Image (spheres, rainbow, N blue to C red):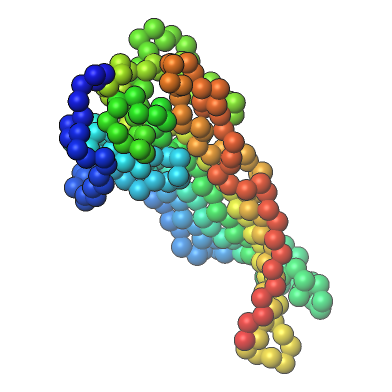
Length: 274
């Protein structure tokens, strides 16, 4: 606190590394699979989970603090893991289209038409998941503990009555929910208290293998791919810095300036095999 001496006034700074953190993970996993039958195969799964720890690998540079809040007591940082994903759904599958020779549709085209329409395969990968947790940080040392990585977090504002999550790109969370802790103390907002936007992604491809006449072991694979087929805007982690040194809300608090996936991408590929 103000006017109190440092723990060791003779020491400027020190860095310590430890592997002593603890973690706790619980989950429910449901999985359904269908092996190839009538040209269809797929695998789908859903995970409902919750992960706690005192330190974990960051999903992104802005996702987690790089150092603990209080090096003398790691329990101050026991909270949601940086990689905690509450809900995650995945689906992947392929389907041999029922078109062409020996198929349900246009089963006897003959000649060049047979080569063009037979043997096409449709593939899809879908991922839907909730967002990653992240810290509400101050960006300066309100605790006065000398940590130059500035992991200090704010305290809860007891007078806040608004909506914590406006869920807009300009203000993903409302920093008015926080206040500065007294100088020389730690804030009471837990580590990784806030949650970033989720993700929805569908990748689709169609492919066909064209055999090369008179070359039994050679083939030409044509593949057309669409990444982020629905052109979904998947937003990244918002700005995590919440308050200024005078306690006012930062103008960039909660601002989202990046995406976690690209926009729709189309790709055409040819592969020669032998």
